[in-house]
Image 1 (cartoon, rainbow, N blue to C red):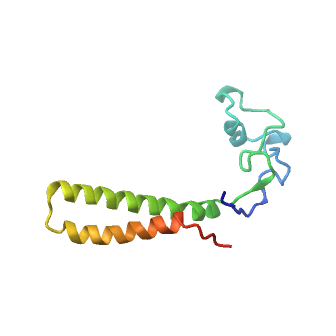
Image 2 (cartoon, one colour):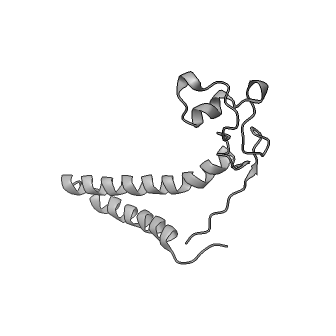
Image 3 (cartoon, rainbow, N blue to C red):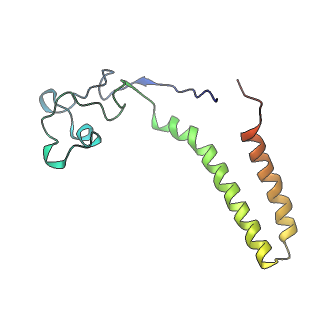
Amino acid sequence: MQEVRSNLYECKHCSGTGTCVSGVDGTSCLGCAKKSDLPFWSRKNHKGLLCGSCGGIGLAEPMTERLNKRITPLLAFYVVAFLLILIFVLAITKNPVFSEVLAFSSAVIGAVVGHYFSSKKAT
């Protein structure tokens, strides 16, 4: 199983408590009420709702860090999917450059698959 590391910081919205008190007179804000799936007409004057920014744990992961962790695997998936579709289309249409595209695509797909499915784990 992979070990996922995350840098969590104290949530500035709830001051690390996990309970939203950012609204008027210490009530929960409208954003946290919406995140709690409360109906539109009853979102005001709630106290003690979970913080919508950190999910109630008092620690939050910055959005840029989440994007940095997810963009590489998504980009690899889309590149491999695009190349497989390109190979399929060129094979169906019997395009004269099929062999060159197949050689290039197989190297790229092999590198991506080798990277993600190798047994060597980085420490």
